[in-house]
Amino acid sequence: MARRAAPRADRGQAAVELALVLPVVLLLVLAALQVGLVARDVVLVEHAAREAARAAAVDDDPVAVRRAALEGSGLSGDRLDLHQRGRDGPGSRVTVTVRYRSPTDVPLVGRLLGDRTIEASVTMRVER
Image (cartoon, rainbow, N blue to C red; front, side, top):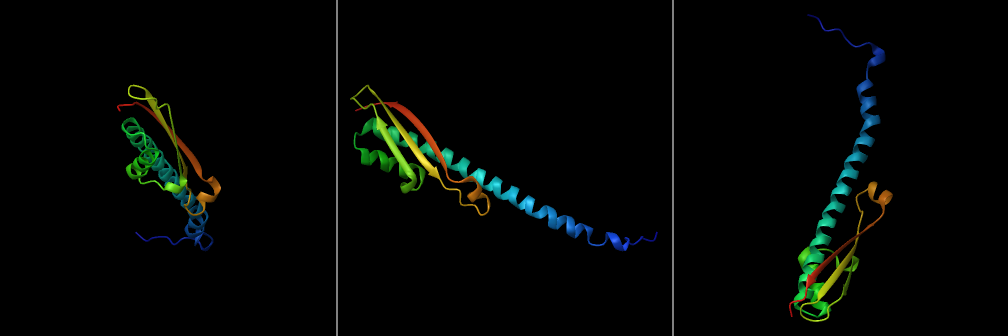
């Protein structure tokens, strides 16, 4: 069976369609990547808050609490704010709140979204 050639008017149609759709697809892929990075930071902030509350439950040194939050999560220290309240002695409850400014650095998409502030709080019973 002989194959019929495409008419001259249809030549290059696929290339034009690809050129029109490719930027949109690329933008969607970059947006999905940025959402994934922010979701990772949400998990890391929750983990940092848990580690900081655990340290605050056994030690009243604020430096140790901040160090535990940073070492337990791997987050950037200059973007992390930590607040501790309620430590009144053994048996009381201590609450640690961690706020983190998540960078949105993915090209094209990051500037559209801007940095996001993520917050997590954890309360634990003071042990000593």
